[in-house]
Length: 241
Image 1 (tube, rainbow, N blue to C red):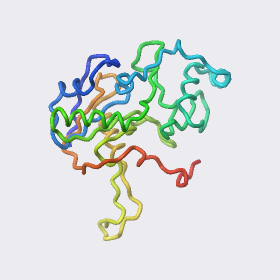
Image 2: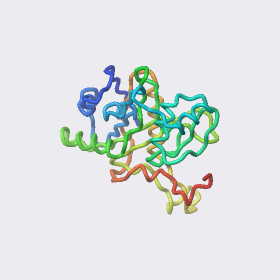
Image 3: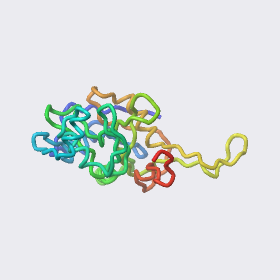
Image 4: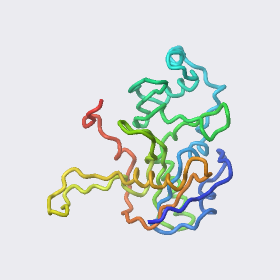
């Protein structure tokens, strides 16, 4: 398997055509997986917020006062969330409107101009499908697309990239019903391949290398219509709620 970095010096704005930028950077092959960092998707889709336009509510003011946060950021977090899971050490762990459990609803002030913040795409599956469809229309190449973001993990230090949107592949490789090396039938083994591919690509992309896109080549998978919901554990199975 190869992971090929695509360096993009240009600062992405809403008027840019990401599809065109990607194609100019690397010739795509059938079976490639195009992995794209959430940040440039958010910028291109206009999910960049000028904090001077945000008016905090009394709730945001109260939370921010207790946790020493910018009340405008807190207001954005609450507007992008279904519920607050935990508040501690100045961090709000929330369930986003998408169903992701993460810090600060994925709202980020890094790699953007001072006084601005990016929100997660409204629907990263749709974003991924849009790019995948345009690639096929213009090149006749069948590829899959993953949109990734950096998340923390409970009980583990550090962050890792995970998938927040997919098109063209199932984000989980389910081994249930197959045999292990001792001929025992596997019952619950399911590998989150979209997360693993996202994490592997982060080793190439970095955080300050101007490499928001990577091409994963020679990874064997089956083209399949699916959504990121496959990776979200149902509430009835969540032992930590």
